[in-house]
Amino acid sequence: MQKAVFKALMAAVLGLTLATPSHAQRFLRNFGLTAKEDLGRRIFFDTSLSSPPGQACSSCHDPAFAFSDPNAASPTSKGANPEIRGSRNAPSIMYASFSPRFHFDRDEGLFIGGQFLDGRSPTVNDQAKQPFLNPIEMGNASGDEVVEKIRQADYAHLFERVFGAGALANPKSAYNKVGDALAAFERSPALRRFTSKYDYALKGRARLTAQETRGRKLYEAADKGNCAACHPNRPGADSSPPLFTDFTYDNLGVPSNPDNPFYSQPGAVNPLGKQFVDKGLGGRLDVFAENGKFKVPTLRNIAVTGPYMHNGYFTNLRSVVEFYSNRDVKPVCPNRFTRTGEAQKLNCWPEPEVKENLNRDELGALNLSNQEIDDLVAFLKTLTDGYKPK
Image (cartoon, rainbow, N blue to C red; front, side):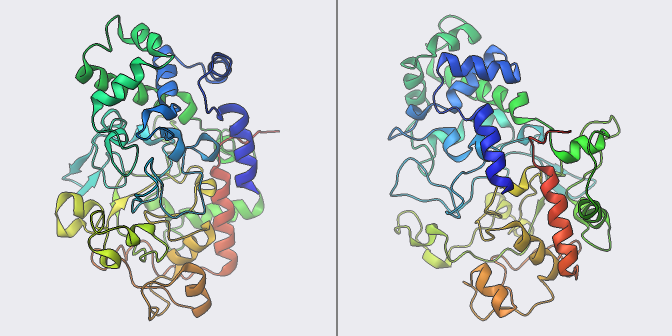
């Protein structure tokens, strides 16, 4: 129900498939976008910028679903080419622009920040340019190809208004400006809303229910949910709203998803078939100690951004919390390709996709009761943007 309500609300405010003048004015009226942010919005929703045409950034980051993939029935995201499927589920990009530049924190001994689930882009400006050239996503052969399409777009004049006359003349510099405009949109109020029930509760303008309050206590308790260890929920020292992520990387022990379409891709795309293992950060860095680790997501809007985890293994939020609670308590399923629902019926969990580097300190044996799991889920649902205080 909450997902349907959120979709209706966001569709009314942000559900723009075409950048028509009337839509643009409506959008600007609601969020006060600057010219550069609005240019980024126009690029973001432009379905002509893929090869073949038909795929926009918004196709996998739909505002009606908190800028996540709208196709909850598919565990991983589709691209412009219907014959090619990727191995990962596109995450929400709301609040992603708060992520610091990718770096190694020597004091913490951890990699922090960056963009994408494996941090392969250091900044949001760099990340914004990558999907256009990825054959699994928007499929363009080069940045020049993208720039040429923008030259033909009805908002080319806006590009030159923002970046100056002749800004589209040099393809290389123009493509960098495409990333700049998209990053400006991602940093705009449209993707940094802070309008959840919890935000209003922090301001004293809303009151959590008894169940939501119990869930919040469980969320913070180190001997219970311990969620706040990786997903801080308290305002910053400067009273800035909490971001519900510490931007680190973690191996949660997520099982392989038998429904991942990447397993059935042709050998040229996936030569390993069902033996493919997504090593996440470790695969990108070629560092064994980072194998299986993926970026800790914000929990803002988590109730409306399923399926969950890098491979979409969990289809509902309650299953995620249950997995956190008893991953190391239940026996291992005989078949590593066991779906969530079947595993729950068998009272087991499949082995992790990557067995090394598991986080056993903050999850796996929380031993939460069914009521406590329900309470935690109730609290997580208060993190959905678009709440209207009474």
